[in-house]
Image (tube, rainbow over all chains, first blue to last red; front, top):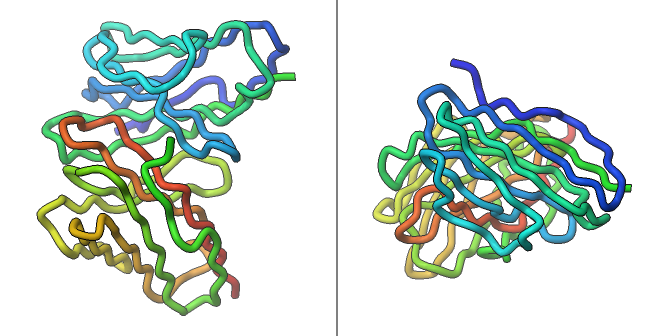
Length: 114
Length: 112
C-alpha cells in the first residue's frame, strides 16, 4: 500500500507570493491533517479535513487555507507569504476508525520564503 | 501551542545502551502516541498507548503511561546507531481523533 505522498518536496518562494502544497493520503483514508514544523514553534496543527469538510482548525491566520477533494487528496494554500512561513509542512492521513487510530505522515514539503 | 514538554531535550548515548525519554501533557487524553523523525523528514509512528493502559511493548520499545501524573515514558533498549532521530510524543485531546498536539521532542544521538 502506497504511503502518504506530498508534493513538491522542496519549494522556494518570495515574500508576498502564494503557494499551494499537495497531499495524497493512503488509499482508503478519509482524514487528512496538516502540520507546520519550525525550529521555534515545533510541530503545530494547522487543520484537518474529512470527507471534503474542515473538521478542526489550529490557531493560524486566515492566510492559511486548505481543501479536500472527493478522492481525499488535499491541498493547502498560503497566501501573501511571510518570511516566518518558512517551515516543513507535514501532511498526515488516518483511517479514522475510532478514536485510537494512528496517523501516517508524508515526507513533508520544505518551504523557504526569501 | 505545545501540549507538553519532553525531557531531556537532547540525549547522547553509546550503541547498546538504553535510552529513556519522558513526556508530560496537560489535558485529558484518549491515547498517547510516540513518533520518530529522522533529520527533518516525515514522522514515523512508533507506538500508541490507550488511556486505560499502563504499559505497552513493541520490539525494543517500551512505553508507560501514568494518567494521574499526565506523563509517559519511552524506553528504547539496546540502542543502535539507526535509532538516532528526534522522538515526539503526541496526544489527541479527548473527543478528537486526528488533531494531534505534539511535545517539544527529544533529540537522540546514538554513537558507535
